[in-house]
Image (cartoon, rainbow, N blue to C red; front, side, top):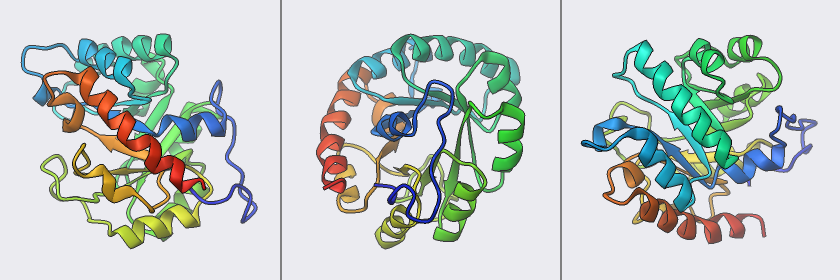
Length: 235
């Protein structure tokens, strides 16, 4: 599960209220938002339902939203996640994360560098980084990332231009780093079983929760499926 802490002299830091163990546990069902799937439903309601069902982490990722919309949504979701006691980050938008009181950000290889995000947000913030190779993973860890999002693992309409990561590459990344790893890209109730044996700490999902008519039930099913997969990685 994300390597052995201290195996190469690296030890994940405590970030505000979140210990390294808290962050690792929060990867289990990592919910990434996308209002395109919601119809007339509100994002706040759907996120609340997902958390009730077992979502353990929330990332606000709304690429087509205006800055004002992201701020409004960020304030709503930050309050919901804080009340539930789970981490909440915003995709890319470091300044908005600061403004709305998010726990941190998630950045990609093409986005603001991890070091810059850390410098702006401070030592207590959570910074997640997308990675597709062992080299990228180790560089992110060295730069102060708290966790990695690795994928895309399976072709997905959400990120059609993402670099595919093979199972062997995913496992190599998990073995190389001491920070938690969450798999992403095409994961749902029918495909999360492919993560077994990789060493990941959880699954990041979008439509698997938010395209469902019942976000709570969808999150609960994913939670139940992921628990034995992650538990077996720690054996």
